[in-house]
Image (tube, rainbow, N blue to C red; front, side, top):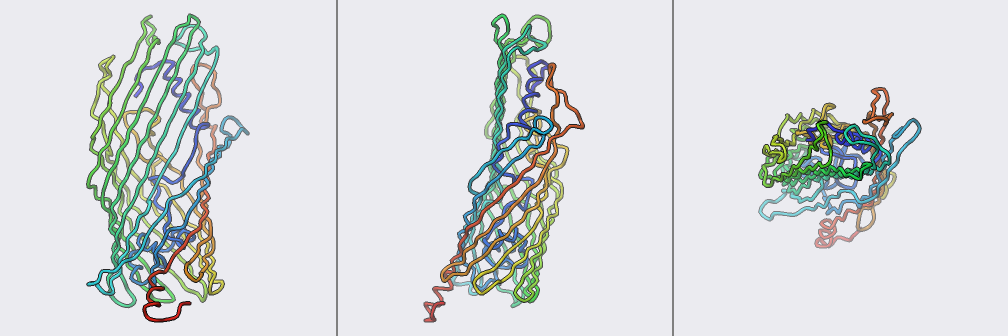
Length: 488
């Protein structure tokens, strides 16, 4: 977006580099380029979602709707209360041996689900659900202040200060109804229909000012924003075979069908007091453009999942895998070409997306230690579909990728389920971590930073989630009371 070659353009580059290595506040590591970041249902969280064939709670509405027809007592679920502790460590962030650290703590996405009956459809099972499918929040901030700074286009030494702010927020919510009709005793099918709502916004703000030896002020103010929201439908078909001691599962998830969507963009840039061409005349810039009610769309891939659950005495081994098709290049929102008022040049902005195919897999272990206590452990992948060649929004180009996080994750989970008189209590934790290398500046002398292709910083992400959940088998308790049977 910045079309002039001046010391202020170089300062922007300087701040962007510093931003990457020093000003990150990471609130969540899961992004829209990942598919296995979130888990649903108390047991399923401990098993890292490796339950395509053997899910035993109302996580079935997501993992395999066909399993709903085989669960004898699908309890009402208030998904586990999950607290998330995320950390970011940048090794050699400023120089060799100089590391940077950030921490954040807060709540994590949740699931609420339950079952209901339709009187004229006996033996059919129905469920409703509200879940957070994916989310991403990140804040970036850096401030630079220097005295006696020299710039090519500003005479003498100047007093300089600059501030950079960046914020992005992505959230995808699903509301679902699941139906599992009776087929045969060992085989069941189910279909989940989800209404999806996706919201994303990103904003970038830059303010830079200098005061030269003649008390002349030069300033650059830049703001860039976009936001969009889309509504659509996604279907997930599930099939489940109960062939104890082995259970099999298969799912097919459709791409999103867009129903409606709109977005907006803002481009704002002001430059005063700088001679960028060296002709003795200041080359002031005035740009302001805002566009609302832009058409917006969001695409998701086909997905096919397979799973197996193997029962060995008091132990169950859960294995799942899921393949996601690529998402071909498409435009999410695009601003109409607009004019820089001060020069007459034309600019534009397009937000697009494309994702590579992804194959995730995992394995979980469930052990019944006694009639009332079960132990769980798991490991699973959460690979990114984002390609290596992308243009990020903060690079100020006329096109930007929607999905930017390229790192693959390995997830671990474990904990216990306690069966009490009135509820199942879930206690456990999950962990996800990964690392990514970026180039780092090693010399800030002169008018711009110097990059060495051999010098890198390593960004290490980690995320702990601590789980406390309850499942209430109201339906079974009420049935026992109505039948006159004693409670346990």
